[in-house]
Amino acid sequence: MPKLSVIVPFYNVQQYAPDNLRSLRANARPDFEFILVDDKSKDETPAILERAADELSAVAQVRYIRREENGGLATARNTGLDAATGEYITFLDGDDWLAPGYYTELVAAIEELGCDFVRTDHVQATARARSVTRAPVGRRYEVMNPRDHILPAHRTTSVDYAYAWAGAFHRRLLDKGVLHFTDGLRTAEDRPWIWKLHREAESFAVLNLLGVFYRRGVAGSLTQIGDVRQLDFIRAFDQVVEETAADRNADVLLPKAVRTYCAIIAHHLSETDKFEPAVAKQLRIMSAAAIKRMPQDALGDVLDTMDLRRASKLRRLRRRVTTAKAAA
Image (cartoon, rainbow, N blue to C red; front, side):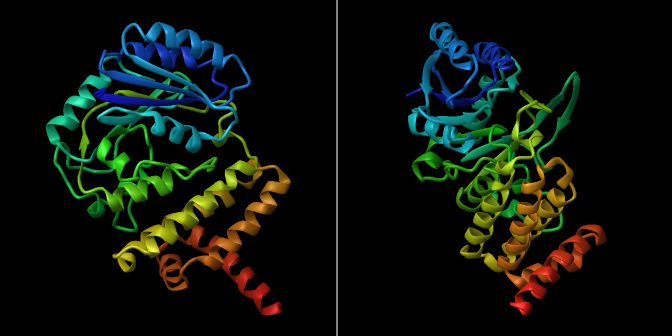
């Protein structure tokens, strides 16, 4: 069994894949397994990966998988999870890269702590600028209960730090079905995943370990494109609310889920200019329907405690739903 499986989905990243693959080589060990998943790229990415797989196989265990159709990041990660054989699992996106030796330190830390998963800080890279983004937990190298770090509702917590690649996960979570993503989600795929992780895992820790460089502002990434795929955040957060409502502690956890959902809706509504006109209209319609679906008691409490600007935007949306319902 490999010590670590690294799942790396790629899609049309010919410009960035070489940096990613060089950094994998700088992290390679014979007991590490690199799973390179091409999500039906249309550029030169597959050719780059084929060459890299041959080269990496001299220093690590390598599997190159080319999907027959494009499924999106969540589905590509699931393809990698289905193939992973390692004792520990981690992720890396195809346009990001690593510091040399990072994975050896990551594995040593999770082995020493003996917990279900660990989370790490990361470096955000925007063009030539670099900044450190810290996981929102002050206590470091201490094993804790993941459920205890979902709340409070009004502050940024661990479920808001949804980056799948910022950490490592014991295989027992994969065997329990906790690590898979919701197939087909094109954006916000990490949100239901991180909530499930914190509800169902039993132990975690946060490390003072920097090693992942997260590339921002990539042309062609979904965060930069205002097409209909962006609206998958609605489906993602519907899932978060639905699953949280079924949790044994739903009464205390739902306000956090609803508040986060409302904040994301308000954020997208404030940036409608980046969407194609038809998509912007669909965003407003789908957001109104989402407001209607939310637990109304929890929604009312959330709107009473949110800042005025966002609460006003969401209340107008809520009134439109009520008015339309009355007219019907």
